[in-house]
Length: 107
Length: 422
Image (cartoon, rainbow over all chains, first blue to last red; front, side, top):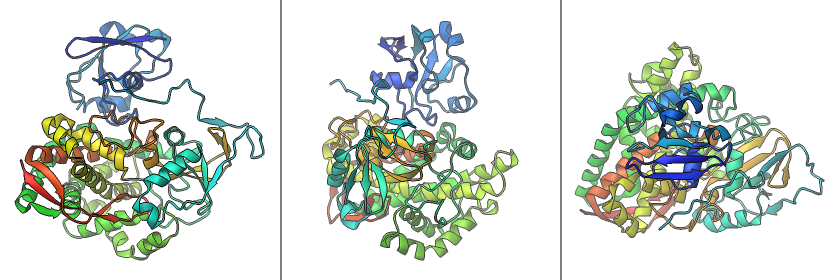
């Protein structure tokens, strides 16, 4: 099972194990990671599962889709070049060790 | 306290399977038949005990009264919502099967549509109601909520349905749509009609349709481009004709979708939240001590009361739902409200808990048809609950609470309250 590390805005880190095929957002909710809201439950509507992907992993998490790109314009914290919506990142073995930083706010 | 989130694990056996089972297949479980009418007045008066009966009878039940299959447990409701290829919307999301009966109005291009047609219209409404658009609306909606609560504090005692749950959305949503001032009194009756029409041909539905002509005429006129003010949701939809995303014929019907589903739903959502905060003063006290809970307090009210109680789908093929066979062309009724209180999914489901992790509730649906206006609803709910928490010390129910009856919507007709200022 791939492990995913979430680094909160206050720098404390939580590492959880994830199931292949789940989204990162779903994994975060399953493990009660506070910095992910996921209001719409993964429907790509709400932009409340925003994460910053660690630079070392940017090339491995896929590209931002057109709908996601538009949603990222509405995130509550700053949109940065490494911003993603975690509902749009699907977990594979290749993402074992993935590091994500959480924004200050989702709303 | 550590919150535990129970979620359907992808490694449990699948809820849905295809192809193998036929009606006489010994491997499929018998479907329990129930003598329950979920569109009857006595059911509406207190649906929760019957919801429990529906959940506990089996993963799928059959309601003889209306000849429909039904699902009331969270896992099955969620599975049906998330498999639009098997459980389609284009044959109507009410009891009426559009393949057999003429719809009472031209079908919705989004609610009553399947991919790929749905994908295109949904993308347009997603953009019109996006998080970025909500950022622009927020300050105005918040100021209107503050002003409404200030006005109600002057009066102290009033009806929280007409004067708050209806009055606040009516003070922001029609302007956000870009509607003309005249004729807005048609909006709530039209929405009530739409949601009654999803139900069976009972008195509620027949009365609503009989009285519908003036409301339909009003809505049809307001959907036209010339009647919609620049900058509003309506004009933004019509602007997508110019970019080639939709045709000029489609735009008015997409405006109609927002007029159908954008007002009565938030009225009942805000009404549910105020009713919860009035009944559970300890939760209102928690909200007052931490204003950041306002948005979740609204979300939990949507889970707890489920303003939209039910929707139907129609099967496009033989399917097994948790071992129960359902044939092609069958209506399947989803009890969203029962799923939102399923103890298999929710700890202490009968409790209104404003700190609950609510993500995954199906009060706004789930999957590709999940409420396209959910961000507008949450914005209205959050800013209203925030205004109440800052300005009001207590909400006391001071008269008879009367329920409003509708085939799909759950809400109140009257909620007499007295506010004590903070």
